[in-house]
Image 1 (cartoon, rainbow, N blue to C red):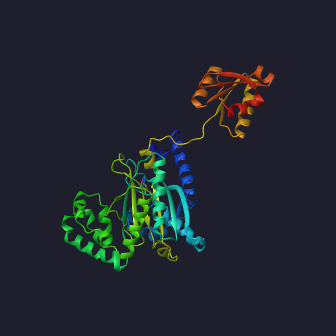
Image 2: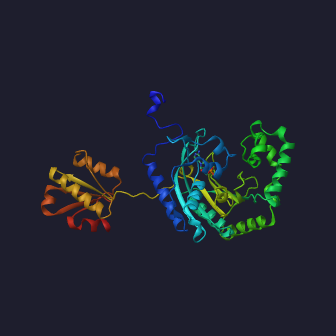
Image 3: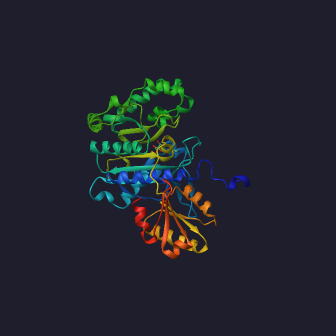
Amino acid sequence: MSSGSDAFRAPKGTNDLLPPESWRWQGAVRLAMDLFARAGYEPVETPIFEHTEVFERGVGAATEVVGKQMYTFKDKGERSYTLRPEGTAPVVRAVLEHGLASGALPVKLAYAGPMFRQERPQKGRHRQFFQLGIEALGSDEPTIDAEVIEVGNRFLKTVGVEPQLKLNSIGHPDPSCRGAYMETLVTFLRDQEADLAEADRSRVDTNPLRTFDSKEEDTIKVMEDAPKITEHLCDPCREHFAAVSGNLDALGLKYEMAPSLVRGLDYYTRTAFEFTSAGLGSQDAVGGGGRYDGLSEALGGPPLPSIGFALGLDRILLASQADLPRPGIDVYVVALGDRARAEALVQATTLRAQGFGAELDHAGRSMKGQMKDADRSGARFAAIFGDREIEMGEVTLKDLQSGEQATIRSTDLAQALEKP
Ligand code: AMP
């Protein structure tokens, strides 16, 4: 049980999102989904929890996320469920379940929503965080790799993040490619085992590629001399990688080759990439992605070569100072006198129905108080109704930027707001 003092606070590692930050948040999500849609990525919503097996099989039991960070619980029927720690496995599960991949390929989907991982909270790292992602399922054409990366890059730039793009290829798991490389890597790691950080030694057996991800100084030093996957790719994977980088060059996209950038599971193949943002400190990754050509099969589906990314909105908004679009208040309806208050409500409601942003006083403020509240609301105009105006069917419209005001027919109000 929570102690009394903690019970009514948001759980550790979670955040309440309040105005004005909530506006930036919503603006970024809307912008993302529009931008993704313009490249053909259609919105998809999957449940916030899934059968635990979806992540065990889809992300991989050998990963930190599945091994250590999942919120897993049993429901009353004793079935094991998990709050989703990421979005890709659920999307692939949904595509397979509903047969979306039996139509035209690739299937292109976009999502936005909260993810859950029990990590140690710090700046830019939460237990509930928000990801935006796209997935393109059913194509291994190098053009789709470049499309996905470009869309992510453009969204980041649009919301005011200057991303650095890191790029790698991790080949495919066959003995002709990553299979042989893994043996070379494991031999190297065993030779250097004494110099690896204690915490990383067990990875040599469980998930050797992940030693490249270590944050431990000792391991980082060892890995500088480790054999790199890019030098051991099979011909088709090398050609695919060359084609992807060629497509990025054609788009004028700058990237840095990052031979240590890995995703440590068999389902992850070929292209791997990450976006970072300078100035975020140690948690500088704003997003990442790559190919997961083997994931569909891991979830019991047919071969379905696919690629996607996930961007972390919490960090994006930490990195960006940009103003994001928000619906504003166009007009504040000021009421002078009791009769005018009822009229102000009717007028504000009519204006809202006509598509304007309209506010009015609900706290019995004086005229001066209402004008002050109009400023707070950000409205460009104040529409002032007194008993005399109502009698005459008029309204005084004041431009709060220029200070100019004019009395007009109240039936002309919408038109006057339209063309200031
Ligand atoms: P991943 O799914 O681990 O590849 O993460 C993709 C992106 O999601 C990262 O680059 C971060 O921006 C964001 N992210 C991942 N985990 C967290 C977290 N615990 N808190 C905040 N953002 C996160």
